[in-house]
Length: 252
Image 1 (cartoon, rainbow, N blue to C red):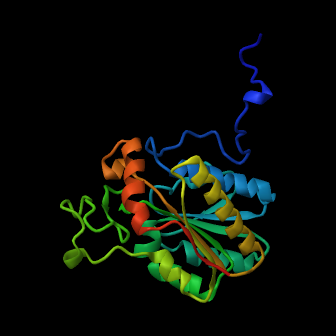
Image 2: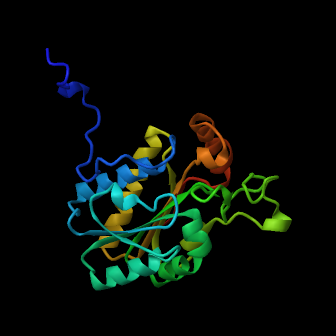
């Protein structure tokens, strides 16, 4: 028997044709790779691989274009929604989405995010929130929890000094221009299935010109949190989820 032949009944997952064979640069245990796969699968299932434009960020996922075989544009830090706005208006029949982290979207890019959502631009925003600046050394981000340690608040986030963590998706859900705002995760197989459905809905809304959709993925950063992947996942459930509660915030 040829050991290289995989019996059909043993083939659990088939890799999306849009995922390139490049070795990912992410840390072991990082959630970005899982989100990349979901995005690739949804684009392929929609048949939009030749009519899709992604806007990649500055941050851990800066090289997303190396892993998903669709057209991408690189945006300056935080400016992805502004770039996506122009792309969608010039190419209304294209699927246009941004891929952003909590620093990119809710710190330097807060202005662009708020105004794009308020205008109701027909784009989808995929927002990965791991509550820390993973790429640049583990600094505190707008979504870092109270008491959570980071390189710029080594004793934990202090409300009097640093202010409160920002639930940016809750703010975006209040804007007239957003049609769908949801908060999901990828910490388990069941969560991955829900998150993928949310991404599909966001992309469908974009093509139906319903307004702006935002899919927040509450994620772990075991490197930035200084934990093993297992402990980071556990910490995510025990600390992140009670504050960043999962589920739909708006579905119009």
